Amino acid sequence: MAWFKRSTKGIFTSTEDKKEAPDGVWNKCPNCKKALHYSEQVEHKYVCQYCDYHLRVGSKEYFEIFFDDNAFAELFGNLTSGDPLNFTDTKSYKNRLVESYKKTGLKDAIRAAHGKIDGQDLVIACMDFSFIGGSMGSVVGEKIARSIDYCIEHKIPFLMISKSGGARMMEAAFSLMQMAKTSAKLALLSKAKIPYISLLTDPTTGGVTASYAMLGDINIAEPGALIGFAGPRVIKETIKKDLPKGFQTSEFVLEHGFLDFIVDRREIKNKLSTFIRIMNN
Image (cartoon, rainbow, N blue to C red):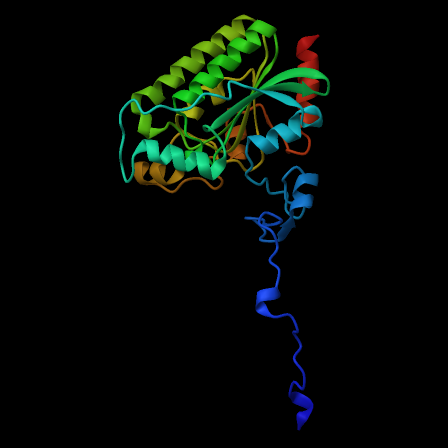
């Protein structure tokens, strides 16, 4: 009766000799749950090749997608947040910032850079959700303001990529002031007749939506992105009614006239390049 017994061990590698796959090589699509290899993610611009779900990515990936040969000069990279209110909740704001620096390698929730898109100059300011939920603080507003001044000085189009949970509560009124500040700067950009393109990604909410994210000469979004002011749960609890299916997705927002169009991340560089070329002629 030895036919159902294992006569020899089928696994010869001891536990201590096993090798683990490096972190970041594999990822799982949040939508279809299929495994995605890193090289496939890069090839498909961080879009699932099985279900077209747009994975959340940060400034590093967006710069890689937009800028020719991933060549760019970062602008105002030395700006960091202060702690004007000496804010403390479960931990001090200073400690939260230090933890975010170490965890993300970023200095705040936004990076700005000047590069070329199909040979045409472009300044991009891109938010990073990994840094305190992409919250808008004084550094975010200041980098956007300085980027706009840079665009006016050099007559270069401006692309804003929004990805944020809203205003940063640790800076309170200092954070809310950035809404007016960035809106005023964008008015100067418009007066100078320099194109402003706003790209809304998942998620774009709160004071960011209520200010610079919706003020573009063209407002565009990625498929399936959450776009709104207050979150769906808050709205539902306030009005005591069920919300429409797909409420606050980019498709819903487009249908109600708040977006110009939705574009797949794999096609966006070509479309933006064409738009900039038309605007510059």
